[in-house]
Length: 103
Image 1 (cartoon, rainbow, N blue to C red):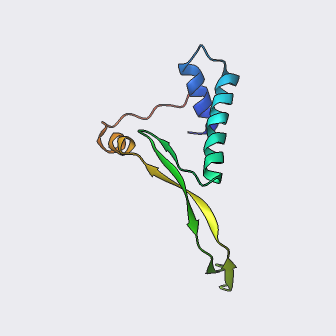
Image 2: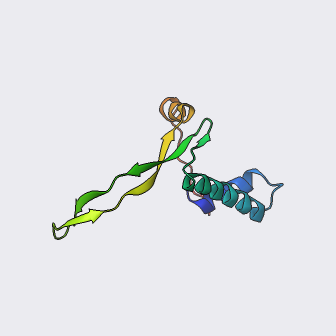
């Protein structure tokens, strides 16, 4: 599901909200998650999962085309761990037929 599909689905399920309001809500939620992660905070959405950041140390890598050793600097990468409810719903929920995309 893309961001625009999420916005369209939420607008469809909440007819009392205008699409631009749904776009603003989704944008705000995503922006706040990004800001929290950039501060090094953990973002937990109960029943869904938790976003955090992990530090990757500097290392020596290889250019796959030439095989030449290259220095890869230290970096911080986002990490997501699915919550128990999400894992349970994925693994124990009855299989649903895929829905056709409405366009």
